[in-house]
Length: 515
Image (cartoon, rainbow, N blue to C red; front, side, top):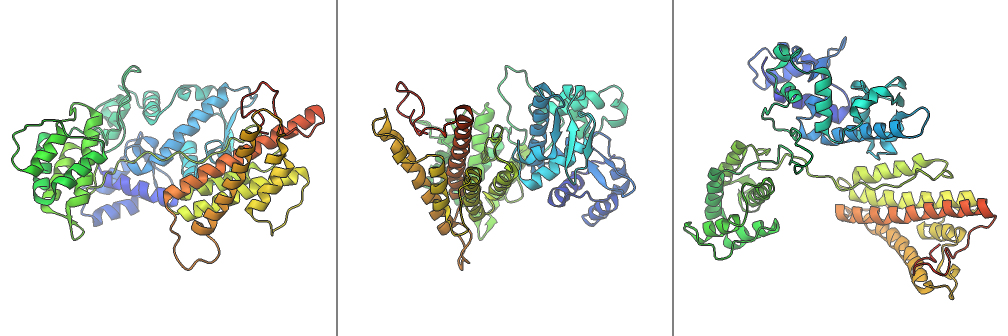
């Protein structure tokens, strides 16, 4: 069977975008239009079972996790898949009488964005051998029992772990050796070192350092270093060469006295000499330097210069996962998602409302920062309204964010004036509470200046870093409001007291009087 990575890539890209799998006919015709010469239809239908299957009667090609693992764009869905398995394992070990994993857990407990949660649902129910019975389908609400069938994935912590467990359980040699051994994705089930442009690395002993993803674990060859020096001599300057190295924290070796001729070649070599090129980490740093240099001074009129093209081709020959313009295809780590701990907030009647705000925040931080900032304001407004409704306090549509917060703070006795001046640390507590109100005011102003709304006639200047700052401040305030709300109500239920503004005795820390 001929290996067609482009077909799997096209199938997965379409699935990621639409949630639907292409048919064998659609994929085969597309491959023919792109110049495939083999019998692609036969190859598609002969795809080994560990990689995927043809569904009937619609003739769609459905890829398994093992195939998707070779495609970097699938990383968010695969990360969510692993997190769901880890949650299923925790549920199995918990005290619940009938532990289950639900579709709502993907949005709530794991805080996945809605499109990612939908793809993860398809993966979990497509490879559900690790679950007991259940109900529902991947296109709607579902639940699956966690029981003895979940035991094999109890210690799965990564995609590599899952592929090893799944491979040993279903595709282990020698039974499958003759039928499927030639396919590189199947070889990964047996720990073979078949090269793939994919972030899959065979597991190392627990005592070994965590390996880099395969797409990043590249050893930069001496040939490639010469190509880089050629590009520096042709297109760079001494200052710009130094800048791209030092942006990665690579400083020149002191008193370097190498054989290179020319100031620009020597500048590059002096920085490289400070690296340990037997180290994966330093090779990754050098790879990033080369990519950044090609972007900084290896372009002319929006195209790579001839020396830069030669450098990129040499990096590809070394095994780097780059596109034709020299951009790194291996996914960068995602920033931490905005999250709230709602596990013990029993008075929160509709937690899905807050989770929906969180999903909107996390879904647009990079792609639409203004939308994230607007969603942050809505999250804080909803939290304040939940508190006010529980206390029976009125509010109206005319209340702005700061007005809602002040009403909620009054209901919870979260005001600087509620801290007795005689209490230990009272000045510190009062400053902290006043700062909360200042933060809320700042969030309202950020939404007005950078977020959506008010029928703007100019694009928002908001950047991803503004969105991350706003979400961090918002979730901090919201979590404190929700926690204080439940502490107040618990205190009232236990003692009949609405909860004093002064918490703790006289021996507490300087912040012990924060309500």
